[in-house]
Image (cartoon, rainbow, N blue to C red; front, side, top):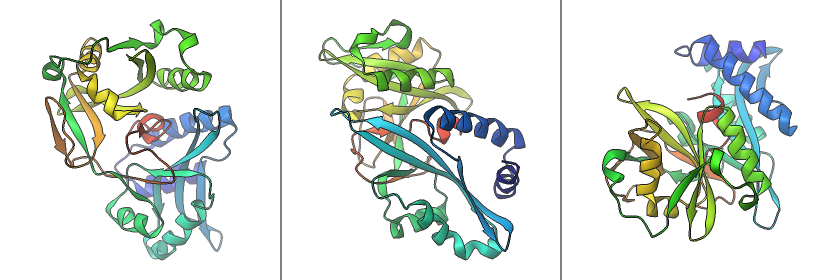
Length: 274
């Protein structure tokens, strides 16, 4: 781990060392809980540490009970003199054919590599929602948000409960959308935008339903001191009291990932608190 800290400090000098120490501790604890193995890979040339990539692993349960493996790639760096080895390092990491891979914060150079490595564009920006205005939206009848502490345990799967509880323990706002008699898990990470308290959607298995109930979502978050919301989106998407922005990095995925799903669970937005 000391080698990882040193490489990340070299690659991301604007980050304080404690950012990596604390974040990698959270990732290591998560990996230990699910027996997911190492937090990443180190690239060595003639015995010297010259590169690093974090591989944030998690699992999702499909409705049929089948487990899907997800690996989120994050914070990769290779010393400039060895940068030509970067594609080989990434290919080695992307070696599990049944695994879904995501890249949520790629640099410009990684964006160019992603297409060569089979990762395709997921979202190219975010919808920035002004919650005091979107709270006035008339939702579909009966739509409401239920916080984790009030959720009936028997109406969610065990996997959904674990995901919500894990993220609540890491400081996220967790809830479920009650719509058409069904509960859909929702996770929001706290952040700031222009100095004001904001949130980012980390998990929603249906972005369409989230938009349908944006009034209920907005009122729920406003009560928790949040005034704006970031929803991963593609250019051309619309929503009440929002504007599309490319201020956030585009996101990429390889594997079967529903375009209507937002799934940044157990990613750097949570584990590293990007």
